[in-house]
Image 1 (cartoon, rainbow, N blue to C red):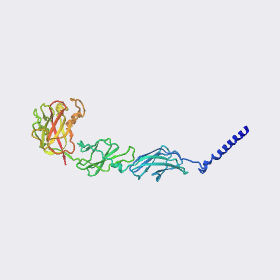
Image 2: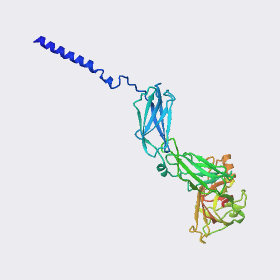
Image 3: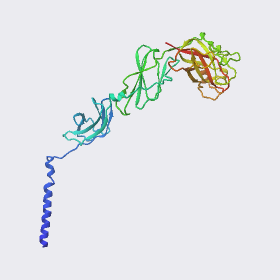
Image 4: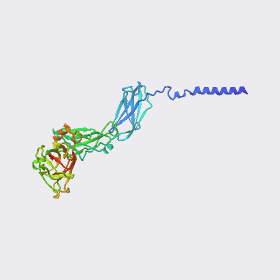
Amino acid sequence: MKIKLTITVLLVIGFAIFGCKKYDTDYKKFLDHKEVIYPGLATGVGYHPGNLRVLLVWHPSPDPSIKNYVVSWNNGLDSVIVNATSHSPADSITVSIPGLKEYVYSFRIIAHDNDGNTSVGQDINNVRVYGAVYVSALFNRGYNTANPYQLNDDGSVTLYFNKADTGNVSTTIKYTNKLGVTAEKSFGPKDKSVTLTDYKLGTPLQYRSAYKPVADAVDAFDVKNYDDFPIIYNVVECDKSLFKAYNLPTDVPSAYGWETYYLWDKSTNEPGFHTPGQDFPIWFTFDMGQQASLAKMKIWQRTSGLYNYGNPKRFEIYGSNNPTSNGDFSNWVKLGSFTSVKPSGLPTGQNSQADADFAAAGEPFTFPAGLASYRYIRFKVLETWGGGNYFHLLELTMYKIDK
């Protein structure tokens, strides 16, 4: 009985060994008795979206047998062959795929070696391509409507813009220069202003912004159309020979022989205009003798009390063409609110040479653009540098738009 069991076990083991020897090489007939070789994979595979195109980027495989990479998309219906110009993983291979639609794509990269072997393939999914639909949602960066520009003493103009939206990469100004030639100047999203040194006053200004949908996009997209910037006209000094006092019942009177008309006598020496002590705010009125759309003004402080005493610190300017005889503000339009600036920032009673030079040149103040024309001007004092209840000033000059 034991002999029969032993023989049976030996037969089972024999059949098992024979079976293993028979099937352990059967897979070779499916591979045509050849070894399967997979070329090495690329690394750092990525992409940069663009305008109806995409830029694919990867580091080449170190496998020296690779001769090219085949990039396919649209379920393999479209493809491009990219030659393996390097086998150093420190290098980069880039390929631009143009002529795409505004869509989300998937790309597949397969490496091919010299013997016809192919890699297992690598996929790049959710690749968004941008185009006209994206552009249709873009808007030009807005300019500062309250203070769109400033005319500088050197003849240049500075344009002011609002904070840029996310994705903005630049804004370009198109204008006519002093030679009559169309010119352009661009500035970045962090810049709140741009200065044109050669702008021809009175000619059209246009601007257009550019955006990137993502920071690493290969293309920037311009807004479809330019927007118009307010035209900047030449500014000239108003004729002071036409100025005269226009005293109304609520106006502050003069004092100490410092009269209103000294404000436009073309002298920055004393005397000027001085008021008695009176509760603030106080105001005075004058007639410019003609209607004018004001662009800016300059004031000259009393130098014996520079940035002190009754020199104005905060004030408002109003305009009217038909002041009411009772002196109220019913027919007046506020043209601007202003604050005098001390360059050094030193405390009251302490002045630097920069403070003195700045005041001696006349402190400039710019009115908002596009003001209507007014003949009568009211100067309303809210606060003086000395904090007292009186006001004094040596000279003022008004500048108008000259169309």
